[in-house]
Length: 396
Image 1: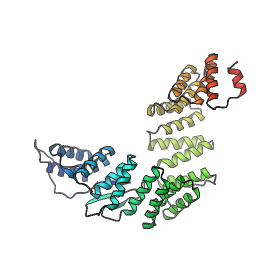
Image 2: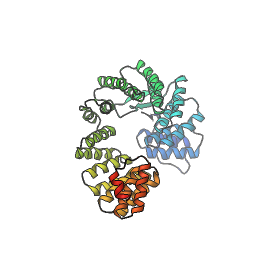
Image 3: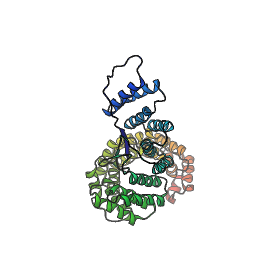
Image 4: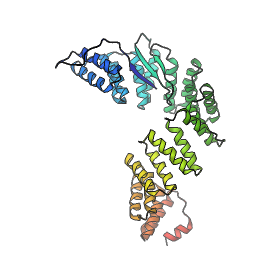
């Protein structure tokens, strides 16, 4: 993705400030801190500058860039909005805002910015954009807004349309990007993703393989090939291992390999992959849920309980985590606590057949016959197949 990093040439100024400092000096100090990579100090300087002079347009743009570096994308979007109100149709700011909006999931707004950018004449600028693959980490290319950025805009428009599930339009934009830059592996990967959305796995695979020809170590292409092979029943080779070797910081190859290892019964290997995945991303409740499931398979009930609890802490309404934790509690003989977890799962998901079924089994253990039968009947009414033997045992 594009990260806007404004290099502004300036004369050195002292950081010592009087009680009242000229906004221009505060801005220059912010520039110095920004260019030195001291983003917290830069932010403080720009905040003080704008407090003294709320109409200082350039301070909003450079503060937006600073906030991007501090991962405050919502704040960056706000600053770019203000700057473009004060100085409309500035290509650098429009490009920055478009990419920030894409990262924020504001796809329709991002699309508007990219389309508008295609209509604007591009002038001189000192702003440098570090272009990174929008789908994964990779080698950076340095671009400026007055450079040949049209292929990148087409690429982003393709990504936006894919996010909006407009796959046909996405492919059209990516075709245009590829026509202008045929050796850019990322474009083929992104088009392959759109083709998968169109339910055309053969064409998608061709694009992923083209990307590998252009860049043999393309981690996303290797990962997507492995996933597509699994989905289509093709023989899976070492594509995931290649992807991980290519970029050990990318999350999805570990998750895919963990899934494949778990399906194959290699639980220790799956656990290793989920451990690595959580080192990369520890805020996703699904990963904690899956690692808990693996630990349960390895009979590490204490560890499984801990992982399911973490998933619940990250998403209180995560009914699968409540169900799985209830199962672990049941295995530990804590039947009443298990019933409480199943009840919470049902509260958040009233049509959760598995939770009714499992609560029925737990209630039967506590000799709550009427409640157990009622739960079992509810599970069956929601589509769960219940064996006659179980029905006779619980609903006597």
